Amino acid sequence: METAMERSASRELGVVGLEPWREERLGRIGQERAFAVRPVLDAARVRYLRQWSLDELLDEARQRLDERPVDGIATYWDFPSSCIAAILAEEHDLPGPRLPSVVTFEHKYWSRLLQQKVAPEDTPRFAAVDVFADPDIEGPPLPYPFWLKPVKSFSGLLGFRVTDDEQWCAAIRSLRAGIERLGGPFQQVLDRVADVPEEVARLGGAGAIAEGIIDGDQCTLEGHVHDGEVEVHGVFDIHRAADGSTFTHYTYPSKLSEAARRHMHAIAVDLVTAAGYDQGAFNIEYFIDEERGRTWILEVNPRISQEHDQLMVWVDGVSNLEVMASAALGENPMLRPRGGPCSLAAKFFVRRERDATVTRVPDARRLAAIEDRFAPCAIELLVRTGDRLSELPEQEPYSYLLAYVHLGADGEGELMDRYDAVIRELDLGFDD
Image 1 (cartoon, rainbow, N blue to C red):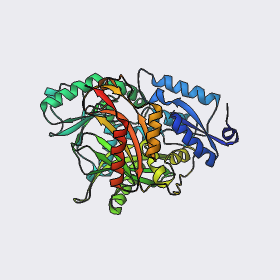
Image 2 (cartoon, rainbow, N blue to C red):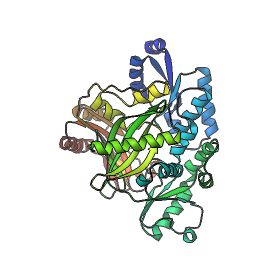
Image 3 (cartoon, rainbow, N blue to C red):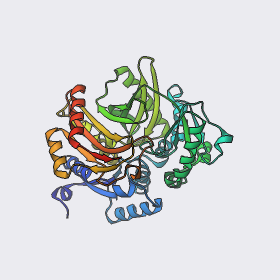
Image 4 (cartoon, one colour):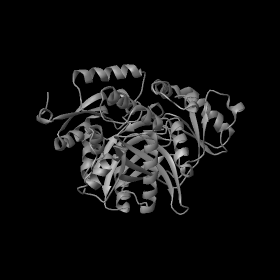
């Protein structure tokens, strides 16, 4: 049944991969901006990929749009959502970045080729890798150590730090076993794009890329493009484990210098302009070494980051979902920070390195009590009693993700103290 807000809204925003709690937040934004929110595809259909056909998902979305047209289409998810949104927007003559520019950034090797052309001094060494070639004959494409990743992945899935011949061959075997899961559907999208560079077409959607090791302070710049004009609406710091294998938490706002921010902004302008990316949001991850004056581009994503939504709300009083919605509706995104309750906010990734069976998690009442006690706090549990960690979907090679914990604070020391207290209160139990 329609709500009063939906009946009074003059426009409708279709969202690919919409989740219930973000639907609620977008609904509140829509009340202020006179638009209603419509799910184009459910999050479960596009986030945790199983066996699916791109054409089936597109047909399902087209049927919904035929039954009830929308005024804009958006997403905050990676492939396939980003590509589906671009295809549907073009088919229905709606605002939004077009598919070739989206795929340019979604394909890690194609994106690196563009980075090398536009910002060669800020692009690490890289090489294409055919995972179905003989690794003993082909040999490692870069000097050890290096990272080996599929050209299409997410959350570190099938990404390996390779330090010797044994790890090189083992990583190739793992990629062969799992790369088609995303690579096959990604090839379906790549086939829709005209004028794909020859070296990209030869590697295809199920290829891999080797990248030189880069270091420094990791961060993410978020921005948007409207009629060719590039603006930045936030910079976030990313904190990694001591061995660099995975990230532990994000914090906002960034502590980087103004000079570092200006350089990242300049790179962003050149990259999105060269790709022809327009009428959409993006985020670019960097490594910054301010002492040595070095900036490395890690990757470019043609979307806002869902990781940053709550952090911006607690610090700025506004959400990057507003940017996504405005761009999709053909407007120039204009964030007007109103001031949130915190000077610092973070999203923590609660992980465990060893495999185990989950024996204890807090129930909903206990979880709500923890959130209330440590407010502002939001917790999303990703495991249930009886889960075997090694059997959970979409896990990276080096650890198992158990929960997300969002927290606000007035300083870094207070933030970490609050996080430690929340972990103690969660009291997750495991049987090794």
